[in-house]
Amino acid sequence: MPFDATTHLPHRTIDAMASTFLPGSFFLSPARIVRAETIFRTQPVLMKSSRPVFLLTTTFALFTACYSATSAESKIASLEELRSLRTKAAERQRRIIFNNDGNEPVYLCTNTTPEELLKHRTAPLAGSQVDSLFYCTWSSGFGLFTHSTKVGQVFSTKEALFSKNMTPEMLAAGTDPLKVMTDFGHKNGMEVFWSFRFNDTHDGSRTEYGPVMFRDNKLKTEHPELLISTPDIRPKFGAWSAVDFTQDSIRDLAFRYVEEVCQNYDVDGVELDFFRHPVFFKRSAMTGTECNDVERSLMTGLIRRIRSMTETEGMKRGRPILLAIRVPDSVEYCRAIGIDLEKWLSSGQIDLLIASGYFQLNDWIYSVNLGHKYGVKVYPSFDESRVKDADAHKLRRSVGTYRGRALNALQAGADGVYLYNSFNPNSPLWREMGSREILTGLDQDYFASVRGLGAAAGSSFPHLGFIRIPDLNPARPIAVTSSTPAKVTFNVGQDFTTIPANAQPTIRLRLQFKSLTASKSLTVNLNGSPLPKGSPKENWLEFPVSPKDLRAGSNQVDVFTTQEGKGNALTDLHCTVRYPRK
Image (cartoon, rainbow, N blue to C red; front, side, top):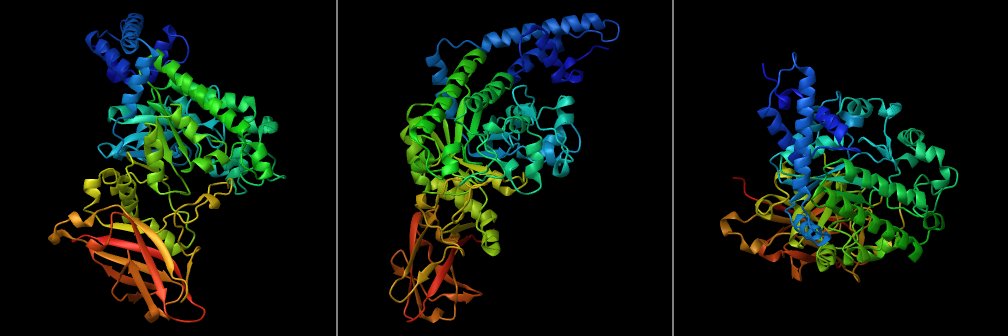
């Protein structure tokens, strides 16, 4: 019977055959695969009786398809045309960006098939509001990856916590996680970015996994001179195992890691994640001081080099490669850690700005205005709360809280939302958070502060002096005395005055106090108007709020007490929006 190569021949075999004719590491784009498959289907050959003929015929057909597809894709007349195409690509809709930290091969997969890799976090997202997959192939720490790499090192240890690591077996079987994700994304209409953590330092942790990860990293174990410090001499901030970007070899490696992916994978873009562990320079970390102009210049030079490379590779393949960065949401703080953010934006180095992380420093409007000023799309990063109080933390993990966070960002003008460390693919959020129209009819929760003070993993240059938004949570109470009222603001992402009377939600403002014994002496104003008497519930006071009294955007709460003496403290604020059940 005729042999159908599209049914029986794995794409990895096709890739290997293509590399016989095409120099370097060559991966087929979806467009090339489609053209090759068309030829295979129209030119079947007998497998058993004509194996040499089959190999010659199919290989020649493959080469012809690849050559034709490459020629078709590469008709870009100039760099100006590529940049115009890049601008159009940056303009595409991104309702939700899903950042996947790529842990499935290390912790979750039990066999080497693509289906096994996809089922844990990705496959159920088909048809959702996720328009972009940002896939991180480990990079914990610097130089270790779970995709096929010759420049870096494959993460292969099976020691201790990593005993189930399937990465080596998956790559040997031809299941490259980055290629699988890219193929899945393109098949389902999603763009795919490779996410690269610029200086991950999980291997500097004192917990069990830290030493194990460090032992597996040949770059760090063989070249300790490239690190910020040693386990015995701790830096003022950051982890000792961070690499030092003043070293030419480190900046060159970072460049070549990105270049290798751009040359070998059909990614739509690259995300440079500067937030996962935001420490990059030895002098600054060891002395506890801000980065200087020399250090910022070194990082800017690296970004320019990466941008130039993406243009070179984009010209070769006939379509642009976008560049995204994930950074703290403050120009001043970015400068302190070595990132000249406004220079990068103003000089056209960046296409997408992913703002914030484990701590937030400004209202979303700050980042939106900054990015849009330079024509850059802005996507707030919704990381999990780092508030330590268990009950407060639980409240902030709710679906309603993520809805409120999304509405606040979209109300501020963000181009979409970005979810980090959110791995349940069956959560309703993936089909809600990218649409204001859907969210405005669903229950929501708001807080004065979702993240509190926050904390960068592995520590970082102190950020508390850069916070320009409320940080109210049980660890940061606000005193209430007879002479000084407590004042705090919270944002709401919906205009309730436009909702018909028969569909209005029930809204309650909940204030938590250190003590409710003197609740009778408390008076609460919302946006300058007194609220009705509150109802005690455990250590909360609950106040009914008319939808017309709540503003889209910032709302101010003032708490007064007539009780003389020691006073009280406001420890948390929680606003609930509950719609009638249909």
